[in-house]
Amino acid sequence: MGARGVGCIPVFLYHAVMDDPPGWIAEFTVSPKQFGEHLDAVVDSGRTPVTISSLADHLAGRAPLPSRPVLLTFDDGFADLPGATAEALAGRGLSATAYLTTGAITRGGRSLLPSAPMMTLEQAAELEQHGMEIGSHTVTHAQLDTLGPKALAHELRSSRSVLEDALGHDVRHLAYPHGYNSARVRRMAAAVGYETATAVRHALSSDRDEHYRIARLIVRRSHTVADVQGWLAGSGARVAPYRDSPRTVGWRWYRRARAVVRGPVFAG
Image (cartoon, rainbow, N blue to C red; front, side, top):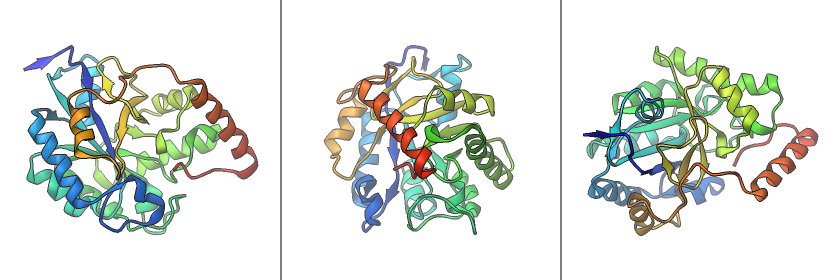
């Protein structure tokens, strides 16, 4: 039965699932064993996994969510995603959303992501066959809030176009690399046609959350099953929406100033 007031909504953010990740992504990687334990906790919680489109429909008032939803999201497009990771999800009947960095998964493409084993663009359709929804994670994985209008538009439009050509249907959703965004970035995301955009914020989302700054819980290797169980129970993190802290605003201005000198910087 659907409900309009669903309370807090855990939106988990995973990256790679592997035992021996490259050093630069190791902090945001979980082992297959950890991942299986997390998924079992999701199943045991009684929450209903939904995709970002279901959350978008709910936020727009078009359709209700289950009373206790949960979202599982994956950023970048590491090589494990269309293989063991997708199989672990499908084996438990869990839906998910994958946000893909097109420059990193396209043959001959360029991105700011350091070297790592990545999936290919051709495998995006396989993810959909496993019940995963596809969203954009830009072309190069730059810090979007430091880019000028032309470069920002390219990151948002080109990544979406590449995915739509590969999949044969609209791609409606965006994830900001490392969550970096601003009011200007959010306006551009809406203007180019995205229906939602997810940030990070390491907070629980809610049915009052911002369509273009949906909060996610970033899962680190150091997080325990107890942490996951707490988030599933609606505890252990604040609930969005809320205002950016002075520290977050100051960090944004510092990064903007640095980008003027150094150019686009990897968001990570």
